[in-house]
Length: 232
Figure 1 (tube, rainbow, N blue to C red):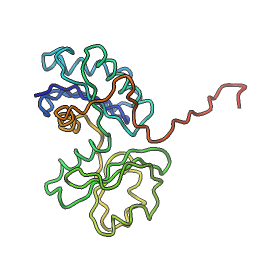
Figure 2: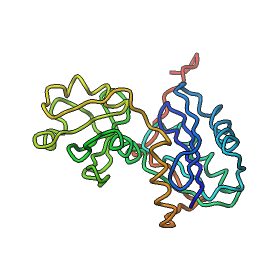
Figure 3: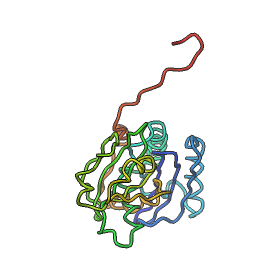
């Protein structure tokens, strides 16, 4: 039985959960934009306090590795690494889209009837997406896609597909003509969906190198030109 602190900061959601034996025993979440740096350590301390343990009692720390927000991922991963260094415990990395798919599957009464496409908003009509079956097997690898009316037509021609996440919300209108496209609103990444995945990785001893692990950005970060008087 493992006691694992799970951290999710890949989007606007800041989520922290304490899981024991793959089950969430305490969770704190916020949907306040740009609040990760302020809330993350407070949430970590709060879930441990709620369950009545300290950081040294953890068996591992798990973090959502991306893709997603560059800044959000940096905050989550650096926080997780800091804890692992301080208490000398292993680091577990969970794919953000896979965890989202796990949550989507969990919410369906007959999950085998669908394929699942979690989506994270990138920019304009671009999303980070992947496709999974009801057993959480990845059918189409994680990629950045510029969505148009013909996107995913190969799979939609023969499968009912559930789309969810903030990326799916902006694609709903452009894909609504596809007969087999189903959109679920109000779905966001959460550490509640990471608990069983991090437990599985712990049991398999599937750990990251704390010194060298980096988030899965998928795309290179491009900084904008600062708007400073006198600069073009």
